[in-house]
Amino acid sequence: MNRKVVMIGIAGDSAAGKTTLSSGIAQALGEERVTAICCDHYHKYNRQMRKELEISALSPEGNYIDIMEQHFRLLREGQPILMPIYNHSTGDFDAPVYVKPTKFVIIEGLLPFHTRQMRLNFDVKVYLDPPEALRHAWKVKRDTSKRGYTREQVLASLTKRQDLSPQYIHPQKGIADMVVRFQPPEDNSHETGGHLNACLVLKPTVAHPDLADVLEHGGNGVKPALRLELGRYEGRPADFLEVDGNITAAKARELEELIQGHLPPDHQTDLNELGVYQSGLEERRSYPLALTQLLITYHMLMAGESLVH
Image (tube, rainbow, N blue to C red; front, side):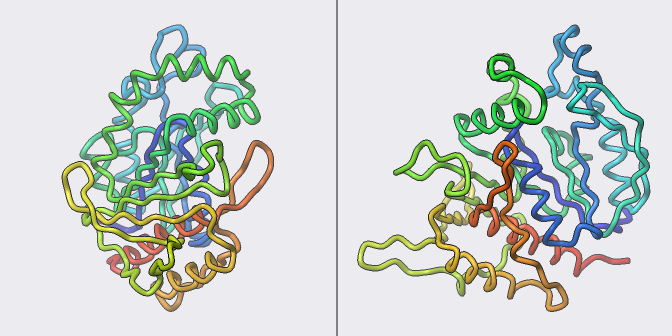
């Protein structure tokens, strides 16, 4: 494969936060240098046909897997594609769009790691793994505020899909280089936004930055806001990086600046653009999300440094 661009894949179930994560990474890299592709555009059928055929968008048979394989490879080689467009508002397809990749390509969706041919294109593979109760809350809020569904319709859809996710979506966790889990803190189980804790499983399949200079040491019963522990994930060694949702703005900025120090010297990231997310129609900010986006940005920039043109 003639690799001309840096590609990252972000996989996860519906409403797991894939678009939110990728948007911040694009901001950090510079939107003019990023091509973002959503796998939803490769659905095989429109909403009405899926309903009639009883085929879910979560299953491979509901998507053009072969075209995704072809388009991922072309993008990786710096070649343009004619990308189909699925419109979530109408549930139908719009006219296709000509896409010429920039230096960085972010591909996010339900099944980006489904086949070996798809996986081979990525420099870094990320899987988003929020607890199901949290993902359901996010999906209800998103689909009722942005996609025209009622709460009852969203809940019915979740029930109908509950057997498909373990079969097709969840296995991608084992393939990812990094598994990201935003979850409520123990003392606030109802939290769904900016104060969620973040736990990142950092597998040794890619080289992660040395975070020794940003880690804190707890004392006097105080738990550090950023912690790194060695453990095992699905039976294999991995580092577990945890960020408290209640981290202060000052401490978060200090950590962001330290992590940014690991980035190539010619790249300056606007830290104020990181961690932004939508709560319904309202824009808010999460510091654990910002730190996660910055760490993934590091991986893309490091891959870019080694790219052969």
